[in-house]
Image (cartoon, rainbow, N blue to C red):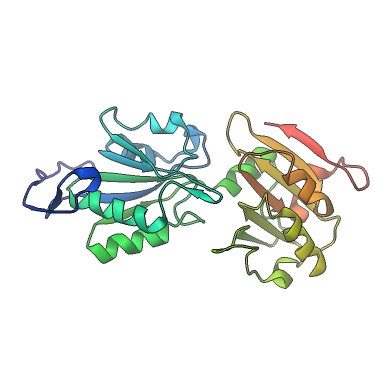
Length: 280
C-alpha cells in the first residue's frame, strides 16, 4: 500500500476449516486490515490516504452510515459487507465483526474496515485493533475527520476559543449497557468548556438535566447538528434548557455541541424557550 512494488502475495499455504461465508480459511497469506475513517459523510472530507486504501481494497467491511458515494470509491470487484449498527438492532455483534475481520485477513485478503468519522472516536476501533493483534493479523489505522469537527466547521461555531472555550470533551450519549453514560458531570458542567455529545439524541433531556443539576446554566448555548456534512445536514440552535426538544425534532444521526463557544450560533435567539433552525 506504500506505493513501492509489492512482493507477490502467497495464497493457499494451509487450508483449515472455519472459512468466512463458506470459503476455506487460508493461513500464512499476506492479508491485512486497515481500520479506516470514512469521515462524517462528505467524500471531500476523506483523507487522501483513506481514498487510496479504499481504492485498493479486496473486501470492504463497512458501517451502515457510510454513504454510497464513499463505498463507490472501492473497486467494483471488491466484496462489500455491511455490519450496520442501529440502536438496539445490530446486524453483527462486535465479537462477530472482530472474527470476520481476522478471518478475511487470514485468507490473505486486503480488508478495509470502513467506519464513519474516525475509527478511534466512539468507533470501537480499539477493540478491532486488539482482536487483530491477538490473532497476529497486520492492522493499520487510517484516521478520519470525526463528526464533531465537521459539525463545528459547517456551523461556524468553534469547539475551542481563547475567550469562551479553553477545553473540549468528546463524550458518548450511550452507555455500554442500558441507561445513560457514567460521566463526570461536575467536570462537564464547568463554564468555558465545550461538550460534544455523540449518539446523544435519545438521551439529550437527561444529559441537559445532569449538566444543569451540576451547575451549568440552562441558558448555555447549544447546537444540535443532524447528518453533519451531508447534503441534507440540518442544524438547530438552542439553549441547554431546550436541548431535548431540539434533539427530538429529527430522526437522523445527531451530534450535540454544548458550550459558550456556540454563542454565535444562537446569538439571535430570543428569551427561552426558543429554537432557530438552519439548513446547510
